[in-house]
Image (cartoon, rainbow, N blue to C red):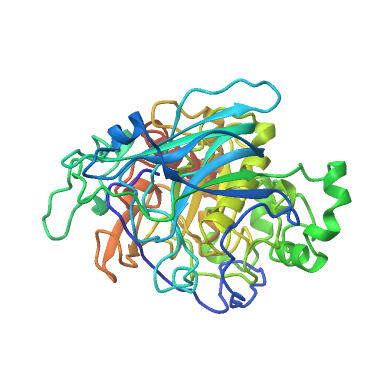
Length: 480
């Protein structure tokens, strides 16, 4: 999720889709307006967001920033309301943050402060494509990656600009070749012959204007006493029903999970899907938005679709690995709120999420079997899906359960659209990345985020497992 080339792209979606399933597909609905800017705590919704403006830091921090490039900004240690996830946003989504962001937090009830932790400044490789209603809403803000810090009630932050001539702190990955002997995708070849920079010097390292620290409280777990008591004021029955209706062919409305099926039963549910047979994997268990406690009032109303699902892009969330799988729903609610209320997106950016125990979660609303347009891989959101693995996998290896979950999910979802997980496909660039709008680019059908954008994501260690995921996914589909 750390970017090396800024980018913004786009694609709008179709109205009513014809999917290779016997599932009803709702028509696209237009959003009723962008989310309001975060201006403080919003107790009427599940969870809350504190938005604290950053200011100049004096003394040694000013010296570190350098007189020619502006002082470092941040906040000194302070008490705040409880929160569990942090991030930094700024006014202009077109501006990149060239510098370092570090935060330390105080654990609730202990008085113990953490060490300084780095926050990923993943400049623009996520988000909606320009030209879509979401991308052109005027509500989108620049943002860092979110960082999960656990229950906290104190915070300190420092943001240091790059010095002139200093290479990007987040240098590009050393290798861009595919793991496990796979063919290098065309996405690595620059059409104009331009060499990929090894690390760009700061063009002008002034920090973006309007930087704010976002402190997100995910709220109570679904079904907790305090959650039940305030449910009526937080999520209307209509909004909750809208979030469930897209999956009614797979599970009853209001279900907290979509049950797993055997391969035979999965095929039996697709009587009209000739393209999917005989190569479709068994449907895995998927925890729904209701199951992880998504507040459907946060997102924009309606669903937005693309025509098909031709490829899956695997990501890591860079939220850190210091979480238990029991906390995963809280992390998802925090990221969801950060994407919508802080970053100005219409909904959760990814189509699916996977925790380190291998649990699979529904992401952006619209139906897990449908081709929902996400905001995960700029320039290539159309006809693809994004899978976010919770955690950071640059130096830490993903558990085997993660790779298995990615394989199971892609065997099923790509299988619905007749896609071979070990194959390749072409996607059309939406522009705003290193390819001109309209250029066809070749990808593996299971790719990493870095295959579509100059970024470390999904981390070196997770990326190296994608070859295994492809092979395993194909086996789940019954391919040799």
